[in-house]
Length: 116
Length: 110
Image (cartoon, rainbow over all chains, first blue to last red; front, side, top):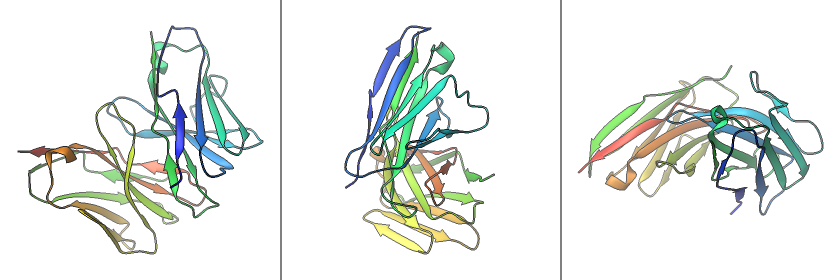
């Protein structure tokens, strides 16, 4: 079946560095992907909608200059956490629909970011 | 905006059935999902139901949807200790933008 893959699954970085997380749809094309963030013991919160070939749409309260999203192809969206700080430590998850507005929605396995 | 509500905790004995309930507010939801998350792990899709269905059964899992009341439930038959996890209910509208509940922590006692 359709799969969404994230890389890396786990990353530790120093404060002030930037970290890039990739989200790939492995056997389908996705014009739209979604990025979520999950704090410990909390639910997933939508951060932004990634649109292929155009700018991402950010949810209220999410800093677009802090969380850069690039959806350069129909199978790849990247989330870059710029100048990461310990409060950015979180679990980041992406999702994509397999086709149009009725296809099944698939989630990546998530990327755990720890900023020291 | 859209809202998804779940009870936070559920405890059952091994072998019993577990029923996790969820209510949502978005009447335009197309799919409703149940995900399982074990400690430190990502989301595992358990099952989903399309909004024009009332019930879906998959082995030990039964999903019931009452669209009129916007109520979704997940029943796990013969609950095992390995079923202990957090279960998230989520709804998705047309393009795939999803709203998640806060998760129900299921504890299965031997």
